[in-house]
Image (tube, rainbow, N blue to C red; front, top):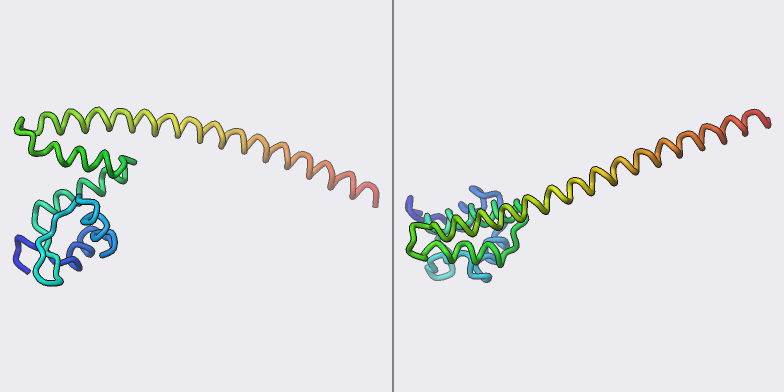
Length: 133
């Protein structure tokens, strides 16, 4: 492969993804590798897009949101629209994540309280059983 293109195996190794993942993103028109017979050759553009796709997925963006953001790259305003929209979606996602974390923290605290209660009940029942022997 040239320095400008990478094989599917090289992409998998570099980004720790499976060939199936790359084919899936290609089918969803998020990546556009060059076809050389049965081979797929990924360009620097594909590598940059994959990096953004994986980051977006890690942050919980939907594939449709990621596609829309990637499509804004060619708006002709030096990526201002793309960056502004990414910022808006990221703010919304952060708020969602913080809300989920608060709900999870509350559930954890409640479960800990229930476990403490259970410990006391079990200890009390053991003490009663031992006294009855």
